[in-house]
Length: 154
Image (cartoon, rainbow, N blue to C red; front, side, top):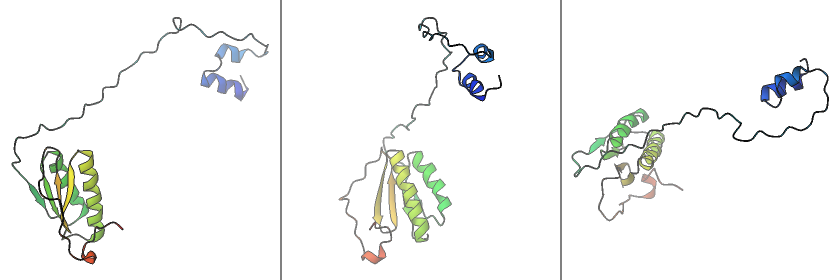
């Protein structure tokens, strides 16, 4: 079996090894596909995916976490508490603008992924609320001048 095409066909399962070792190539009649009953079914291993585990909705909020991050790696504390169903207030006044934007992008994805909400309270303070926490208020944010708000999208 020196022909690379034959080797490739055997490797891909397009030809049997016996056919590939037969040196004289005689035209052979077309094969009929085997009926489904004759084919041996390969064993199937079912995949067990974990179900989405959501925390039971507590009757009342017993804790709210306030975080004053200084670096982006403080996002882990925010994520762990928010994942546990604890509302988180994030005060970004001690962060650089670039890290603060990164952290808000992360928090937005976190709240979206866990069916929560993110709301701006002031220009550098945000509230992450889990899906089981209702936030009341008129929803408007009092903003200072446009130059002082670093997170506006243009």
